[in-house]
Image (tube, rainbow, N blue to C red; front, side):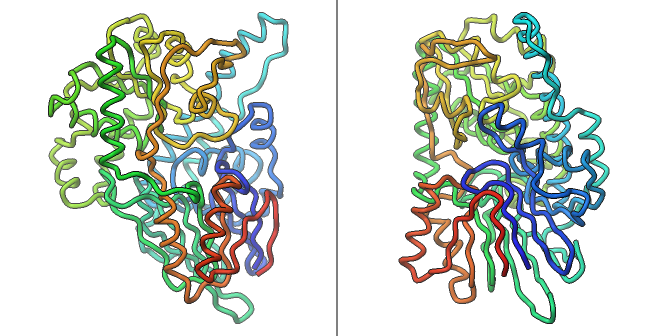
Length: 464
């Protein structure tokens, strides 16, 4: 068996790990890399292998940094199944189509600016038609259901607790008379978070490929993060400003709405309009209703009765049309706008930031990890000037970062995840993490007598 690390290696985005087993090829995830725009375009467009030779794909979850480059994979010749949980199939279908629409819309907007400067137009990374080709190739499986993606490999998906439908991937491999077990974590969630079940940890694993996003720190208690978010909202509204929140349309958005409902019901913050400005979030709401198997009993009951706080919040409006979205930027009254994308790189959130960044009454609230060279990272770093669509804007608004709302496991749970297989594991590969975070986690694992911990480079190939 050979593992080729073609994405999320020495970085967090662009998850893509190619396994060569029994003369077949199995791809774990096919995500978009996010970073500097020129580098991002070239890196996502060009694969480091012949996609026509890939026999199967297993998708851990629907987030774009794990699923968003599937349209290019199919466009360039992939013809096999894409296995995922049923909830992930539904969510990924929506998210990939939404991503294609954003790619087309952003290219159109940028090309207007480029035409004014006499520059040649750019092509979208992929189109809606490309995304539609992917949807027909999904094959949904139940949590825990055994399936055979390639000869000699029995796969099962287990709850990861990160977003709806997210999964860790277990592979029981028989190759040349030798049996081994590999586990790919995907993105690991957290305990006691709203909406989702807790993640299931690996057991009796020989090879572990796991994320290391927060390998250098544990998260604060979710209750403390709730209080920090409440205080940001309260002080912004009291000074007459808008709270602008870049958030992933699936997962984080629902959690934020849940929290805002609680704050306003209790009187901790004034009742002001809350707008979810993401067409994807509107459609994702129905997916949540359709997949009650992903929730605990209490939440399942809420959803079945259409009473779930993330779905029926009185002050909440889902913004559907572009005109409605633009109208929000004309208004001066206090409000909360939650919009995608989560790293503020594409979509309607970019326009909301552009229209609100120069008002000191406003707050841009960062609620998730931000990849280097993204606008979200530049805002989180509180840079005084921000380039938006090729123009420089002075940042006069406040910026707040709430770390404890992350849907990723912190250092403490990452340690437990690895130590649970200490007695059997022979190799651990840390992916989906920057160097500082991954190397901190590696050092701690070494201290616990886990010596075979590796931090593979991009396109590194390892024979097992």
